[in-house]
Amino acid sequence: MLEKTRGIVLHTIAYSDKMSIVQVYTERFGRAAYLLPQSQGKRSRMLRPLFSPFAFLEIDSEMQAGQDIFRIRDVHQVEVWSHIYGDPVKTSVALFLSEMLSRLFRESESNPAFFDFLVQSIRLFDMMEEGKANFHLWFLLRLSGFLGFLPNTEQYGEDCFFDMLEGVFVPATPAHRHVLLPAEAGVFARLMRMNTHNLSRFRFTRDERRTILEQMITYYRLHQPELSEIRSLEIMHELFD
Image 1 (cartoon, rainbow, N blue to C red):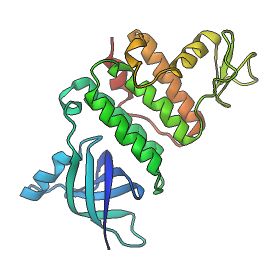
Image 2 (cartoon, rainbow, N blue to C red; image 1 turned 180 degrees about the vertical axis):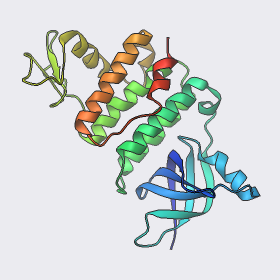
Image 3 (spheres, rainbow, N blue to C red; image 1 turned 90 degrees about the vertical axis):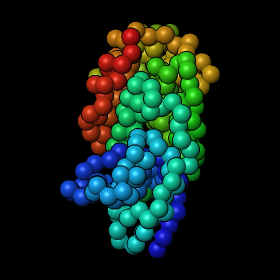
Image 4 (cartoon, rainbow, N blue to C red; image 1 turned 45 degrees about the vertical axis):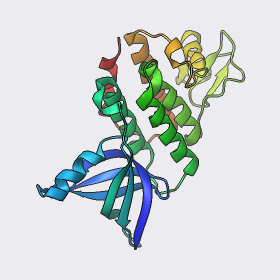
């Protein structure tokens, strides 16, 4: 059966000498895997550049019951991003976030609200001139809400700790080691005030941004234990002064 859906490219891995598998977060099916030819034929050479991380595509594919990898019959770009692939910082952020998404979303389950958020976020990032150094932090915080563990700031106070297991701010140290001390907790609470209009107002040094991202990845792993090594994480640590 031929099926059409829009999707955001997440990750491509080698499958054989002649094929790669492309992981795409789709509007209709959630995460889906597609076979991408790796031959030197004209069609293969035309297809491969379309499947960069965060590319926004419409895909016609042959989908059959019982299969979890599908064959592409036709594909074209829905939108062509103007700046992501020409800006080394934006390209690296797209690579990192798309890898995170490919490791977090393992099930084929449609979530139209998340798909809309993903498309709108990438569209914003493509056009962003200021604040791009903080985009990945804002995105990961918003993503945690879709995954069910958005930090709760209702009880935050200046001397509070952040209980990473429960995702809440507390007045005393919890009885486990997964906690941020008040100074670090304050940074986390401050991040929760980020929105798409004020990203450029949040100033961090490279070391601060590295620490924040490492803490955020730790927070994710506590709530998503299946999250494996993020190979592009080191690139993110080297990006921003």
